Image (cartoon, rainbow, N blue to C red; front, side, top):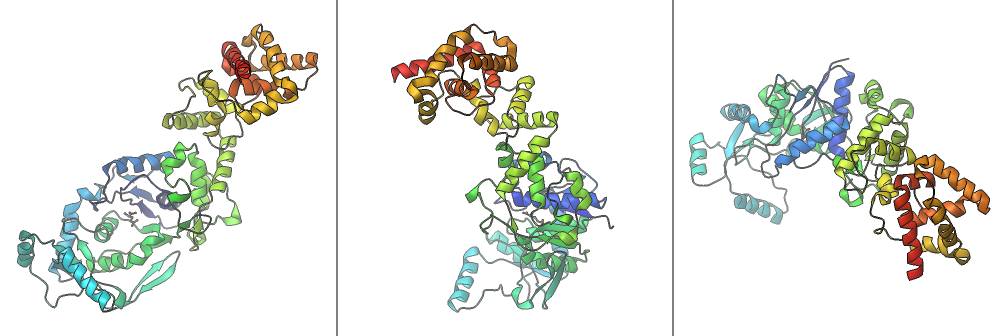
Length: 488
Ligand code: GLU
């Protein structure tokens, strides 16, 4: 198989979103599978949209996902620098060459003049296309225009005939001659446009596969004609289908998280997210959906990349995550949980790995790490700061003439005399003995206790819950609950 040199070339405008992560993943897989190279380059020539902090965010998100690159920002390599803002001379030399060869020309309309031309075209009900001048302005004329405050850009001469691009997923895509206009390759601020910098770098860096989102397909002709004009080799193309929500609308923040970082913060494991992202446009052979990154590298193939819109299924992600957490090695899970806690402000104390392991164990079956503080956070907060759920209090404590309260009153002294050093198991045994003596089912005892110490009917097993609290806090909470009854 041909070794592929692929690249992920994000423009730094914020955290990596699901679409970007999918592009990075597919490029990673294709490079790994063919024993090729995966490169990461920062495309930061759009200074208006540039967000410097986004570079570090993207790097962090890629690393969290486990998509290591062989060449590019931070790791270096033979074709650096890997930030386009540090390669301006290279682009400029290509722009100059095109101007010198008469394939591109200076233009210096102001934004207002261009807007007026567009408005005129609209009024005359014709599409606007920039009209190429009969003779191209000289470099001197451009310098004078610049000196007089005009924005000087360089436009590339669009080809006279149709342009066809072959795409691995979408097949042949033809753009008719009439639809192409002389587009800008160097902007008024002196920076190259994305089209130019992108093709110059792909060639300079030896990229032989361009794999990216479908939104770029419609303008790939620009890159193709630039390559031809510059005599640069044409890579293979593979555009990836659009990502939709379950209702068929373009995936957006509207219905939940779309940034990798948000999923991390919400308590997902990267392996589950990567697994789901892999299915956004790729249909694995045999329709096996659950896969590790290593399995994906083995089975990934171009011919199973579809062009139908992909659907981002949040329920499936939750199911993947539940399974990934249940199957994860304990050390791996601990690392993930610590990462989750470092990003969130929860009541759970960090730093005691023994405790964290225990919490992971007693909440087994959780869907995301966020379920753990939701279920156990109250155990670590102050004894007098949680609310009692009125509905639960009625059902568990007040019903049958306050049978639940009676159990609490009875147990308070007995628990006060019990040595909590016996641990969760010892406490369970103590409660089982109590139930037998009092002739009560365990639920009739465990539930009132649970409500008294957490305010809700949901917590880990009662022995674990009380063991984590310890005797003093257990008693303080039972007392508070009984006092609340009197006050109410
Ligand atoms: N820099 C482009 C972006 O914003 C990517 C271009 C490409 O992949 O060719 O996502």
